Image (cartoon, rainbow, N blue to C red; front, top):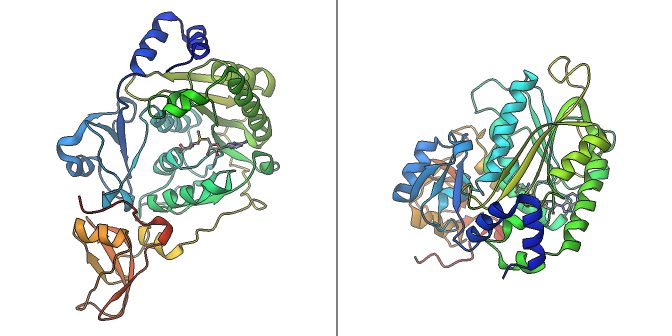
Length: 395
Ligand code: SAM
């Protein structure tokens, strides 16, 4: 049940008619959309994979994403575990469009040092990687990405999703925004912790936890995060500020505050509302940090985050299996059926009596999934215990 205070604030923020449309949409089923990993698959391959379920392209990300007609079981899809795609709320994919806008506005798409400040679980991070990194065998543009998450318990999921995307040139860190003092970046993405009105359709608890007071607390935290990180944006650099909430306090008013108090220039603000756009709700703004010599005019003076707390994956070998840079002949390979891939992902035992002893790379639809160590009669399943599928795989 939506709270009256929420509805009042919604009407204040978006007007009566739009508020009515949003409230009506919150009573309907959430949309599901998937975004391809361009380093591993073509979007057509992913459509083929989903068959009948594949629906309309996401209009603002049509080269990489589409809606599903019904929710699929992603946990029971080995292609999901191999990093073939990411399941992401459609509005959030507008970040990719904004990054391409930055390339165009700055006249530059190489040598960029980019920070994704509030990164877990990694939806925006994986899309940033798609925009910034280069396919194996193509010349490197030398872009670098730092994917940061302050909450320690959320960093492992971020690291796993980064590993699934399979790219190099990305560092996962676990720092408070204030730790970035003295660093400098060409692009900073602040996908801020917010009051989460865009979660209302998926998560009834988010409706219960909403309060006017919490909106104010979120706004105060957003101002703190933004003031901490703004000095690390190079003159001429670009910030993408986003939330998954509808109210003006955390959205338009926050952008106005960035402009009036920090000295940004707002280039674009875009809302995605349920009932108007197919998705759960998202807000994104593109902000420029003005300078006489823009990001396109001089080489980046960006410094890598030397003093940051870098999160080193606990499972480097499992991550190597997911890397798109793994030389094709480094390990003997076995292509698995869906059934065997699910057994592997559940940490069941598999055997490969006809294969050489030692490490074997297991693949699914040609993508690296993980390793076993072949001992002859049996093979040790090296899939990391915390990443195993816990759901019954009998379906
Ligand atoms: N960008 C992510 C994605 O696309 O998957 C979602 C990020 S979520 C909207 C906001 C993130 O900010 C959460 O992971 C949360 O842990 C983190 N966060 C919470 N408090 C924070 C703070 N004070 N400073 C920076 N990040 C914070």
